[in-house]
Each structure stands twice: as C-alpha cells, then as structure tokens.
Length: 156
Ligand code: FES
Image (spheres, helix red, strand yellow):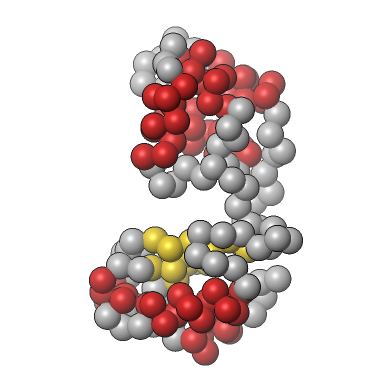
C-alpha cells in the first residue's frame, strides 16, 4: 500500500481550494483527502463544512454513509474478507475467525503496530470462487485457512 502523508491542514486546504468554483465537490474532495492522508481526519470536517457552506453534520453524514471513507488510519496492508452470502455458504465465517486469530486483529480493527487492517466487506465480485479475500489490491479466490496463511505469510 502506498505511504500516505501525515494529516496537514494546509495540504487539506490546498486540495479543497483546487476544486474552487466547481459544484458537487464534496465526494471528489473526500476521495482526494483519503488518497492523500489514507483516511478522513476529523479535523477535515469543519474545514469542508466551512469551504462548501455545509453543516458539520452534513459532512459527517456523507463520510459515514460511504463505507469506503475511513475515519481512522489504516494498516500498511489492508485485508478484506468477503462476508456476503455466496462466500458465507462456502466457509467465509470460519475464515474470518481464522484470520482474526492468525493476524491478531478483530474484524474492522488495525493491529497496534499499524501493519495490518482486517475489514469485512460485502462482495468482492468473485462470488463463484469464494471465499474471496483481497489483500491490498490483489484478489484471491477459494481461500481456505491454509491458503490464507500462505497469503498472509508476508504480513507483519
Ligand atoms: S459473495 Fe463473496 S465475492 Fe461475492
């Protein structure tokens, strides 16, 4: 995963400023902020509210609505496990329990050393080859516990 810039208010303001004069810019700005910093810092909320003439609650609402927007720093590696029905029917729940034990992180959490985030997602578009797992941008299918250990071997 690419290294992210530590939160800087001035850098966030420059991103907001780059959209000046355009309409409907909240989502693209949020994407840019997440791309730059790796997550949406709480300090960005009042910055966006003021710049876009929105309430803080409106900005919060949009960030919370889209699960892709992260409120906390993510691990250097992000492991996504599909928890949707097709993958559940072929052992996703067992795999989740195994992944939590193997990585020492509970679902939705990030390890204390920042090496890995474990995230449950609903469908990775690989339903015929479940259980499906994505490690950073790499998709894996038919992941059983043995395969998971081999995929996770390099993490941490
Ligand atoms: S249900 Fe798991 S990839 Fe679609």
